[in-house]
Amino acid sequence: MLMRTSGLWLLPLLLTVATAAGAADLVGPESCKGCHPAAYTAWQQSKHARAMDSLSDQQKKDARCLSCHAPDQSQGVTNVSCETCHGGGQYYSPAYVMKDPELSRLVGLVDPSEKQCRTCHDASSPSLRPFNFVESLKAIDHWTAERPKKAARAEATTPPPAKK
Image 1: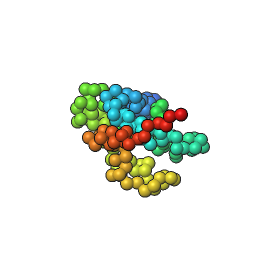
Image 2: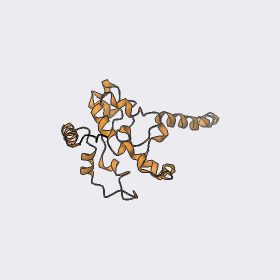
Image 3: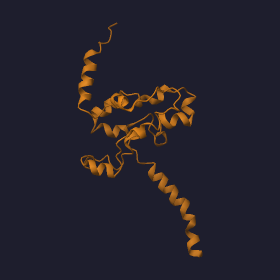
Image 4: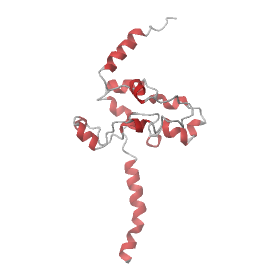
């Protein structure tokens, strides 16, 4: 009996180590850029990449706001990044893993779902209009063949900067 209980002091230590290891699974959006430059550019132009900019100074200190606008801030990632939606990339980011869709998903790559999006885009959000998942996916498109065409049309219709 003494032998079983004497190891209980290790439990908090093991839980702390496991939590710390789980908290270090993000590689950051810059790591995605090398293999996914177009997706990275699409993300940079999205509201997700500037999620913190929409908060007041007081809201930037409010955990309720940060849980959606900077959910990975404790790991050094501000705003809503690639890994906020696709899961921490520590294990799926190597090129040899990403070349195997099944393997990448087995080791942590997440295909975002409507349910996942609604953890932030829900009725409790103080300033969010009704959330339409299908339309919202179009706004953050960074994976379809249509995206480059849409980007090219946007560039073609953007007037050049005014000369002073």
